[in-house]
Amino acid sequence: MRRMVAETRLHPSDLILPAFVREGITEPVPIQAMPGVVQHTRDTLRKAAVEACEAGVAGIMLFGVPEDAKKDALGTAGTDPEGILQVAIRDVRAEVGDDLVVMSDLCLDEYTDHGHCGVLAADGRVDNDATLERYAEMAQVQADAGVHVVGPSGMMDGQIGVVRDALDTIGKEDVSVLAYTAKYSSAFYGPFREAVGSSLRGDRKTYQQDPANARESLRELALDLEEGADMVMVKPAGPYLDILAEVAASVDVPVAAYQISGEYAMVEAAAEKGWIDREAAIAETLLGIRRAGARMILTYWATEAARRLNAAR
Image (cartoon, rainbow, N blue to C red):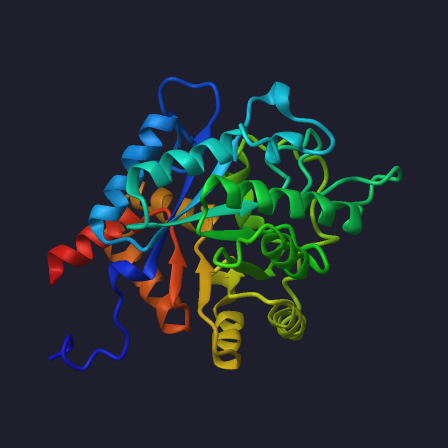
């Protein structure tokens, strides 16, 4: 009876798997703060993509982790056609073709020696306009590598319009743009910084949103849609379900939410202590995000959750 009258349902095709691929390793490297998640080699990334596809997961969001020696002030490894992310995009496309939506993180933070999402000015501030030039180049090399969707995540003013124009200029009108519309400055990003080998000094409060503000998200939403976003995202998911619900009620484009590393780590840590039922907690968190209005959920449990959903049908 409960199943018959359920108002919200979760399906494997609602899920997207974020995955990290690290340059210069021969075995996967476990991420200590995210039990069960690894920095992949190129080979294990291909395997993870196939497993996600077979489980019915809709997409995979790729993050590149370059060798430390290749990081510099401009994040040039991020726009190198032979950089780790571009290579990984080609690897995954060769493995799964169009059976899995291949998405890529479009940001400089993994590739800069200072760890910020953009180019720094002489006084240490992030230079918005100089950063946009780098994002345009990143979009083009990722599109040339074969990505289906780019995800500009740096929260620079005007980034969606610049990325859309850059893609259209090289004839990649069919590459979609997933806007990180409401990306909050959050304490829950901590484990992610281990995952991408971040070199961050300081914080990102000057360009990520204040957790105290809700209306600001709707302003960002209007700007992103005006600039040509095909899809929009709220990040993090769990602490911002109110924002997610408001965004979902305001638009007619697909809405995504990213269940981030800290959200994942809290459940895994509590489950390891025996304080909560792990599988039930995973299902409940995902269902809550879906109920709040997300059509797409980026979660590190994507393949596992998809398999469990398939088994329950």
